[in-house]
Length: 392
Image 1 (cartoon, helix red, strand yellow):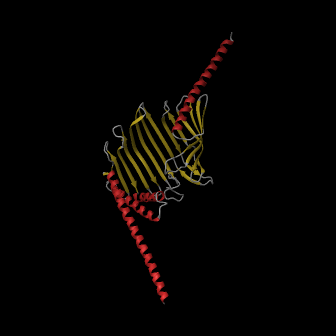
Image 2 (cartoon, rainbow, N blue to C red; image 1 turned 90 degrees about the horizontal axis):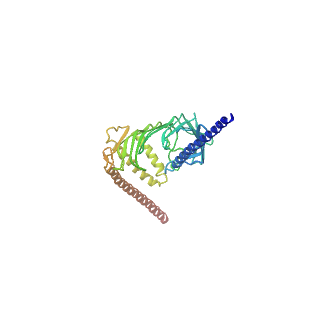
Image 3 (spheres, one colour; image 1 turned 180 degrees about the horizontal axis):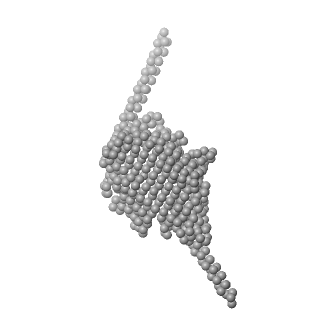
């Protein structure tokens, strides 16, 4: 008679354990499927995704992740992570991420470089119940990128990223703040455009991003967008080139084109112009004939000068900095730069470029004709000299 309560308790305990395991399995599987879907939607390549952590946690192990960039003109290097582990309480939606064996595939040299962190980077994720991202934070102190010969290729100082979102049934509001400091010898251009000695690769620079993005949906369609740029800045420590952008642009159902105001400020504009010219030479006319290089270089420098003149229409422009106010009012056809019509400016530049190209082409043709005539004169003089000698 006394054994029945013990047996009942044992059976009840087993049933609870089984029920809890089933509940854990259901929650874990839903989490796995949701994150797997997000990874696939993001275009990230991976080999395997598994989940463990029973009974009190969820641990997602993602192996052989690969982040590739397919944008034309930018580097085709790929970030490879051997293993990522996302950990969370079983009923929680907050995750801590840890990384193992991070490498960068160097596409131009067909080799893998290793990232060595001074301290382990920290990444945390938080999701809403529907699977949408609620928050994300990342922070590291500094790291170096080492090649197969144990030689330092690149390095970086403190890096941090912070994303927060507020979601309702039909609106999404995101705040994105990121900072990347003391980036050294990083090249974002495709290697076919540059080499290791390229002047396009900054020795040291900082990047800051502080933006807010608002989206409004009707069903699956986005009907309103607002991007507020508190600060996007690039600071090259070697050349002292500083570029900053701020302002706000929007679009909605009544006007699908972006409208609003953006302020672009470039400190040390002359050095920035030189950087643009070096970029142009290495990416656009590297394989041109000497004759075309001269013509296109002159055209490019003339266009730079036109932008410099345009910048002086803004009262904030000085000898050392150029300021451009880019704006468009809702439902207006044209954008304005420093109060000048963008369409008119582009049209005028096209006309001037055609005139310049025509003049340079004619000048080159005249030069070729003169050279040809000089050669013919030399030949004639040589023939006459020979005849004179023969008569003697």
